[in-house]
Image 1 (cartoon, one colour):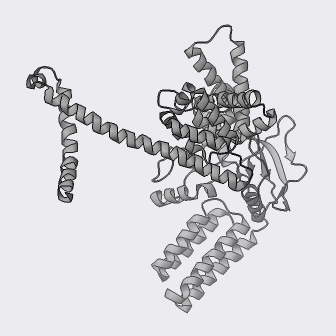
Image 2 (image 1 turned 180 degrees about the horizontal axis):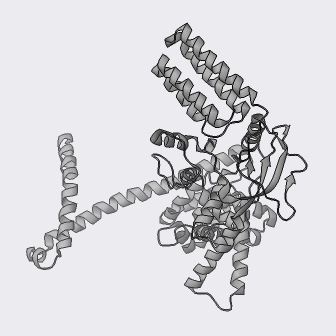
Length: 502
């Protein structure tokens, strides 16, 4: 039985269920619509029928008479027999694999997924001929939202729009599946892991990769060379003898079983980018200006698959510069082992992101740049692991205003920590000192506010009335009036409360 005939037969089942009960008809229809969203082989069709039987049996005791139940079950059994009669008829493939440059034929050795040997064929397919899978678990919520809004499942093009956030859905995040980030990588290196297709062309694995390739082909952001790199894809496809259980084994294996691959730490990636940056600068015939530096950084971002976004490149360059300074200090001034220092730099690499922020006055980087002693103190505490977390770094900008607290941090640095309890106590003490710095800063700002308001009041009282008419602009007068109206209710409330308390 083909899918057209099956669909027609199931429509008849839905109508019969509706005649028995509108509620039952709605439940059966929901199961059928979900099951027929893509072509079914014999095993999948029979599983769909089994689910409908479960629904019928589950509702029987509530709303359906014995005779109606028996009639529905007879119709389902007859349909199940018709499906079973065609069980040996394979599904025709929706895509055709091409043999090219020695690629084609069975994949050898036979791949193993979830403990099963699953015969597959390899070949080349045009990217735009591959339909995106509208049953991908990664898209489950998005697909349900789409079906609820449109009363049908999405087309392959609409699935792509969902994955690229082109189709806005309530609550969905922008570029939630990071397709643009993946496209930047594929544009440079191509697709390195073959997508896997079911016999009917359904994508069992590789929805994001194919979506990224479609984005590259449709976007003006990518060059003709990059587009040609993804116009055709090398894929694996299950053989004509594959079963629904084989398909399920592929999905489970690739989505639930860990592959053991450990991504590079940021420290390693940042070092690679920094080394390439130094090499690029060395090739420049003259010292590059700001415009040329921006061009070089964009090229570097593209080379390392970050697209045209230079934000990551700038961040990594600053972090490595500071990490290098950290290493030089501990190796040369503290005479520590070079490799131990590098390990610590890698372990605490995220801290250098915070230490490099705020180059203008009031920022952490500016504060450390103004005091070599404070910077070295911070480097020592970091090497010793005495910062509880990287968020504490942000409070360092207040330390120079409180010399007594800087002295306390130096005392904690010089304290021996021979046990885990000693280290934990030191971390707590550093957190307490930096918290006190922040608290004192807030107190100072409050005191400063009182003095500034008193000064402003004296200024207003001494200002001739004619100055409001002749010297102040309309904007200044409007701003003054707005500020006074803003604070007046709060001031009156506080004064009234104080009057009651006195």
